[in-house]
Image (cartoon, rainbow, N blue to C red; front, side, top):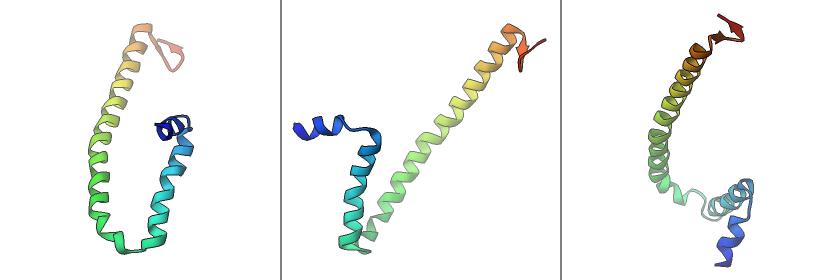
Length: 82
């Protein structure tokens, strides 16, 4: 599949720009008619939030605990030996 090979060689920025083109063309040609898809859009965004927010919260707590343990082990806090 030459299309997939081409798409895999692009940078993430170029992939986003290519993904924006169908959305903008739909808006240009159809206007407000696809507005009924807003329910599906909102559901998708809320599902992403439900997955990402707990992950980010737990990973930040885990990283801070790991940092705190490492500082206890070495006896240094903010560059000062305790």
